[in-house]
Amino acid sequence: MRPTVPVCCVVADRHSRRNHANERAPMERRRSVTLFLLCSFCLGMWLIGCSSNGDPAQPEGPGDPCDPDPCEGTLNAVPDTCISTSPTIFSCECLDGYIWDLGTASCPEDLCDPDPCAAIDDADPDSCTMPTITTYACDCLGDFFWDEFSETCEDPCENDPCDGKENAEAGSCQGVSADEFRCTCQTGYMWDQGTESCVDDPCVPDPCELIDDAVLGSCTRPTATSFACECDTRFFWDALTESCEDPCDPDPCELIADAEAGTCNGLSVDDFTCGCDADFFWDGDTYTCEDPCDPDPCETIDNADAGSCTGIDVDDFTCDCESGYAWDEVRPMWLALYNTHKVAA
Image (cartoon, rainbow, N blue to C red):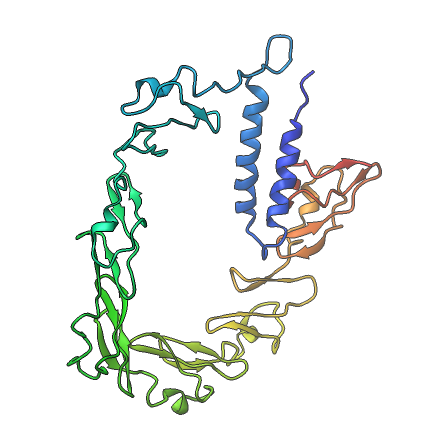
């Protein structure tokens, strides 16, 4: 006789629980969705594919991708050279001048045969590769970079672009790519790759010296036009106001029901936690103290003693069970509300 609930749903239940075990108070809705998807999948596998005598139907095994021989009908491929690397992947040998491309399962022209790099100035001979089936690339020598558009090796620092550039030092050019470079800037300026120019250095002079609760000499540059400072203990950098702020001043816990004043702990410029009164737990999503036993969930659970709820976390609890039953701590809390939170003692 078919069991009421397939074993795989229990496995899915436990798998979902393990996935959330290390998360900070995940919402029950997310747990429910995860378990629903896992259980729905295994229910489908449980119900589908059964023969009339109740034995699971055995699916046919994967076929051989080399039978019939796909190389025989592939342009520029050598017949009877098929090699299978998985039930769905194969390769063929190609005629001279062609190369096998796994992505298209075809033999496109081998752009590296003969090697074009030998005829290109400042390219390393025999370094040809094919990034795609329609392009090739060469390694370049010295300070040269490969230009995929012109198919040449280019030096972006030829005719020193730093010479004559405002606030840049002549002769300081360093190549970044075929058409990109960087220059060393004079004191008080920094290189901005986006505009390829020397712009004012936001950390010169050090702005952190003038900001309350900022660490002197700690200025950094998130972008070419912005700065950030390290802050003293309990303070966090606010990029919008360019200041160091304490999320616990004034104390937000004084205004939160069932929170203990003076227990605020700052996590970032706009995030904090509070200690809660007995039986209450901090909810970092709503910034409130919640009691998972109010209203009493044990009242709605079969074979559980009403009024026996003990809170474990903001969204987790345990109940005392009647004689002959024991609490199952592995299953998610929401399952209890559907009367499946029990095991035989």
